[in-house]
Image (cartoon, rainbow, N blue to C red; front, side):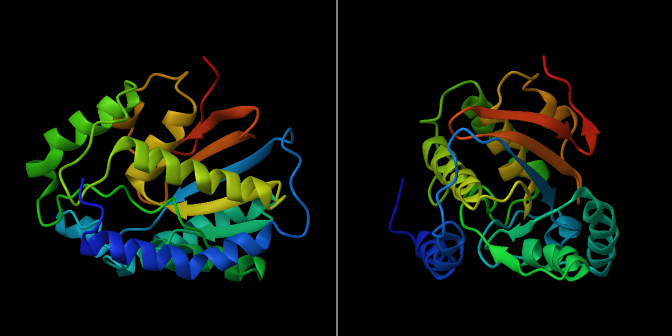
Length: 239
C-alpha cells in the first residue's frame, strides 16, 4: 500500500482541517464509556457520480444533482423528528450538502467529522460494472475477517478503514450527544456498521444496498459494542 500517494495527502489535509471541530466537541467533559448512544447514518443524496455510474472516491468528489438536493430536503424533514442533538457529515462535499438541509431545519451547524468518508477503492474512472467483482471480493473479505486484504494502491486496506471508522464512532460518543445523525456514503456506512455488528446476515450489504438517503442506525458504545437496529430505513431485529 502506497501511503505517500497524492490521494493520501488530500485525505490527510481534509482530516487535519476538520479535526479541531471534532476534538472540540468532547473536550468539555469526557463521555461515560458505559453510556449507550444512537448514531443514525444517512447516505448522501444522488450525486453526479451516481448518475454517471463511474467510480470516484477522491476528495472532494462529485456534488449533488438537482434530484439529490430534493432527496436531501425530503430526508431532512423525516429525520428532523428523531430528537436529533447533533448533525455530522463526512469530509466529502456531497455528504455536507445533504446534511445542510437537516442542520437548517434544526438551526444547527454541520460538524465535519473525519473517518466516515467513502472507502478508497483505488478504482476511480472505472464503471460499477467493471469494478463490481473487485469491490465485492475485497469488502466481502473484510467482513469475513480478513482485514489485511487491500485494494490496489491508492486504495486502502481493511485495517485502515476499520481504524478510521471506529475512531469516528469514538469521537461521536465522546461528544456526549445521545442522538447524532451522520451523513456519509454507501460502502463506508454498510461495511463500517457491519464490521461493528457482525451478528446479522453479512450478505445484506449486497442484497439490500443502501440507497441514496438510505438510513442505517447503530446503538451502543465503544465499550459495550454496537448493534445495528435499522437498515435502509427498516427495523433490523437482533439475530
